[in-house]
Amino acid sequence: MPRRRPTHLWRGRLPTTVPQWLKLLRGASMSASALLIAALIATSVLANSAWSDIRNHSAPQITSATGLYFTLNDMDAQLANQLMFGTNKELADDRSTAAKIYGERRSQAGVYLRDLSISAQGDPVAAASVAKAIADFGAYEEGASHALLLSKQNAHAAGKTDAETLAAYRSTTELMRTQLLPEADQLVTANDVAFDATYDDTTADLSSARIAVLSVGVLLLVLLGALQLFLALRFRRLVNPALAVAFLIALGVSITANAQISAQQEHLFGARHNAYDSVVALTRARAVLYDANADESRYLLDQPRAAEHEQHFFDKTQQLMNFPGATIGTYDARADAAMKAYRAKQEDLRFTGFFGDEFRNITFVGEREQAEKTVAAYQVYQNDDRRIRAFVAAGDVTGAIQFCVSYDPGDSNWAFTELDKSLQKLITINTDAYEKSASAGDGSALSGPLGLSGAAAVIALLAFFGLRRPLAEFPPYGRERA
Image 1 (spheres, helix red, strand yellow):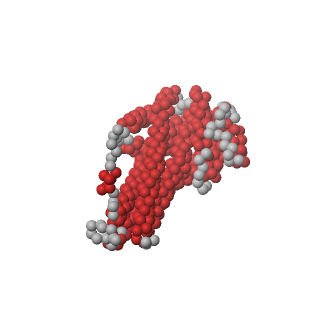
Image 2 (tube, helix red, strand yellow):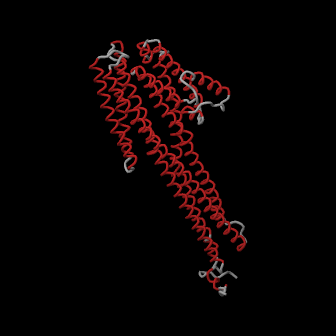
Image 3 (cartoon, one colour):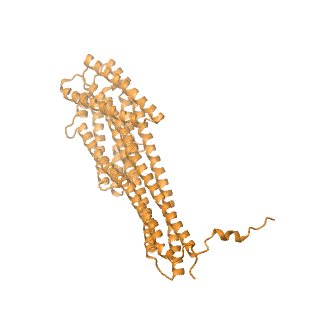
C-alpha cells in the first residue's frame, strides 16, 4: 500500500500568522479584481466588435443586396414600358419618363454592385457571386440596348410590338428572370444568414461573458467578506471602512455588469429581430412588388405569352400575401375576408408571405396602423390589375396601356405609387428602430464595461490600503501580537 504523505509537510505552505493570512486574502482579492477587470474589458471588446461588424458590414451588405434586387426589377419594368409604348405620340411623355427611370435604376444598380464587390473582398465565394452578377448585368444592358434600338428602328405602335423587337426583349428579360434576379436574391439571403450568424454568436458569447463576470464577482465578494470577517474576529472591529466600501462597489459592479450585458443582448435582439427581420421582409416585398408591376407591362407588351406573364404576376402576388389554394379570380375576396377577420381579432392572421412576416413581427409605435394602410393600398392595386385584364379581354389593349401607366388618381400607376409610398413609410419605421437599437448598443458597448473596470480597479486599491493599518500593528517579520 502507498504510504500516506505526512500532514506536517503542508504546514509550511499555509499561513501561520495573522499578517500572512491578511496578505493572502488581500492578494487574492486584488487578483480577483484584476480578473474582473479582464472579464469586463473582454466583454467590452466583444460587444464593440459585434456592433462594428453589424453596422459596418452585415446590415449595409443586406441593404446593398436588397437595393440591387429592387433596382434590377424596376429596370426591367421600365424597359418593358418603353417597348410597350411604341412610337405613339400621345405616349411620348410616358416613354421619356420610363427611359429616365431606367437610366437612374441602371446607375443605382452599378453602385450597389460596386459596394457588394468591395465588401466581398477576402471572401472567395461571395466575390465569385458578385462577379457573376456583374457579368450578367453587363449582358442584360447590352440586350436591353439592342431591344430598344430595334423598337425605334421598326417604329411599332403601342401594344403591337414587332416580332424582331419582341424576340430581343424576350431574350433579355429571360436573362433577368432566370439569372440576375436569382443571383441578387441569393446575395440578400447569404448576407441575411451572415447577419443571423453574427447575432447568434454574439448573443451566446455575451451569455458566457455574463457567467464569467458574475462568477468572478461572487468570488471577489466572498474574499472581501472573508477579510472583513477575519478582521472583525481578530481585531474586535466590526467594520473596516475601506473593505466595506470595496464590498459595496463589488456588489454594484456585479449587478450593473449583469444589467449591462442583458441590455446589450436586448439591443441586439431589437436591432436584428424586432427591426431588421421586418426591414428584410419589407424591402424584399418592395422588390417583388416592382417585379409584379413589370409583369403587368410584360403582359401588355408580349400578348402571345400573356397567360405566362399573368401567372408570373400571380406568383409574385402570392409571395407578397399568400393564400393557399387561391386563384387570380378568388384572390381579392380572400384578401378582403382575411383583413376583415384580422381587424376583428388581431390573432386571426390568415395569410403568409412577406406581408404575413411583417404582421407577425409588429413591434413599434405606429407600425400596425401603417402595415394595415399598406395592405389596404395593396388591395386597391390588385383590384386595378383586374381592370387592366378586363380591358384586354374586351379587346381594348390601348385602353389597358393607358390605364396601366396613368398617374391620375384612380388609375393603376397612381395606386401603385400610393402603395409604394405606404410601404416605404413602413420600412422607415423599422429602419429607424434598427438605428435606435444599434446606436444605443454600440454607444454603450465600450463606455459601460470600461467604466465598471475603473470601479473594479478602485476595489483593488481599497483592499490594498484598507489593510495597511492592521498590518502596521505587527513587527516587520509578521510575528503575532501577544
